[in-house]
Image 1: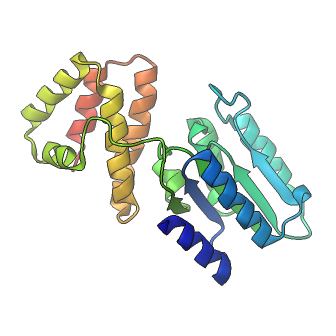
Image 2 (image 1 turned 30 degrees about the vertical axis):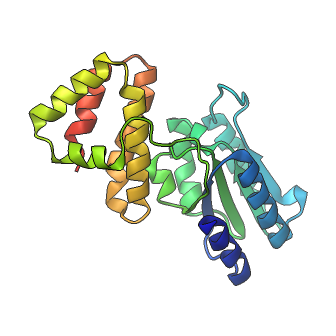
Length: 225
C-alpha cells in the first residue's frame, strides 16, 4: 500500500509538515491515525477533534471552527494534534474560516484531516500533504479517464450537446463525481487543477440546491482543459 509506506516513512523521518489529509475508508483512516498518535506520544488532553454534529447529514459549521480557534488560542505546554473528521463536510463558510489556521497553525500544532472522499475544496487540499489509501468512496462511475480526456478535446458545441444529454438523463451528479476524481488525481502532481476542482465542488453544492443541471454542466465543460 503506497500511501501507508509513505506515512510510515514520514513517521520514521519525523513529520515535516503541519497539515496532512488522509483519504480512505474509515477503518483504514482510524488505523493510520492511531499510529500517528502513538508515534507523536500526544496525551488525550492535547488532542482537539472536530466532526459533524450530525454524522449522517450534518456539516462542519463555522461555529465549530470558531470553537476550535478559541481552543487553539490557549497556550499549550507540549505538542497538540487537531483532528478534523469527515473533512469533506466542511461547509464553505467553515472551510474559508479554517484556511488561515490550516496555513499557519499555532506553534507545535499538527493538523490531520480525514475524509472518505476526495470532494474537498482545492484551497484546503493545497495546504496539506495528501495521502490517498485504497477503497475511497469515489470511483469512476460513468466517465473513464479516456472519456474525460476526449471531452477536453471537444468543440464548445460538442461539449454543450453532451451537457444537455447528460442533464436530460439525470447523470449530472455522476459526471461531476467522475470529473472531481480525475482532476483531484491531476492536482496531486499539478496545482494548476486548483481552479477546476473548486468549480466542481461548488457545482456539486449547486446541484443540491436544484440549480439547472444542464447549465451547471455547461459551465464545467467550458472550463475543462
